[in-house]
Length: 296
Image (cartoon, rainbow, N blue to C red; front, side, top):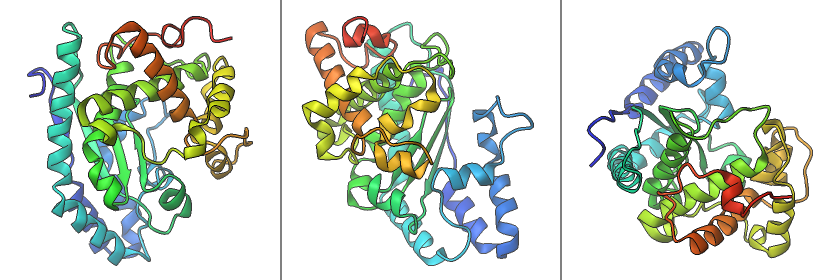
């Protein structure tokens, strides 16, 4: 069970998606902004608040015209799989595991938004294989999926991966300063979050879109040598790989898709092995401690 002090709000996005797609096309963007308003608190640093329609588009959310039938079919698949209920139960299990491992841990209330992705986006569908998720802002988790078999099988693992991030960067946790943070922080955070999901759900815990080539020792070593890069604006090519860099208009760095996740897995597996700790216990462990000191 979840900590009695943590309230889980799982937004009924099945209903809101149907509302949006039932509206006349010219009204859909504004309606989407309204139904996503519960997520406005994710972006307190944006003057005047976020444009939730643009956030939706930027996180590979479903198109508001031209794909209604496919989106509604995907929505029905998520309903048939009890996606919202499974995510709620997984988060409760994850919160229980974290608070058991770290007794003084306080998990903030969580608002969770699950949405169908864009089936016409080749990068989303093929390169990152129907998954985009973000849990780095305390109190919020957003998950965008296309419900193919692997994603449906991994729903619980996806949710608790993001929960681990949420707690790591929550009150009393690691401070993420966008201008001062090192690449090593995100690489380690991805490795810890995947390892936590694997502690709860076995092999389903590991992020599925990581290219096999990313697991090669030379790739892991290349990422490790870059861990001191400072400023989050430089991270995505290393975390997502060259295809992600090109998608974001950034310069590729010569690594396959998911290289940062693969490097994080390797570094965290080594750390957990030598320390005897679990990924739940290490939720707030500084990244340099995980990699064994100064990464340079």
